[in-house]
Image (cartoon, rainbow, N blue to C red):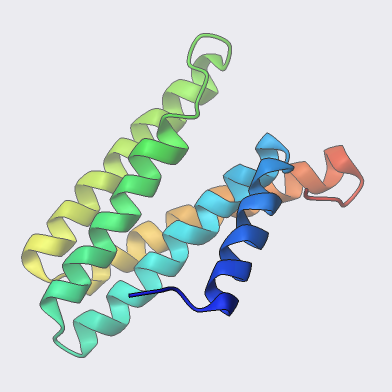
Length: 134
């Protein structure tokens, strides 16, 4: 019924971290969150936890569509933003396929794509910020 003091403290700490973070760092959190959800989905699929797998894939899709794709500035980002938007859309469709067909290979495919893009994003931020994320 009541949250534990530790859970409340952790939530406050996380919210404070987000409020003071740079937009670049927040995008890093989205990449990490999508990867974590897909790692969980892979485990749940292997354990035949279909409801859990579905919830985790749905969470990853929401992060990709409502977070990563929605954060693109398609007016100023030009061709790169358009290409990323198309890639995020492709990832979401692959995850819907993975969810319906219990396809671990499609999940791995999206994990690989997220890893490549997220790695490039993090590297770009490290060079721009002198190694600092937040």
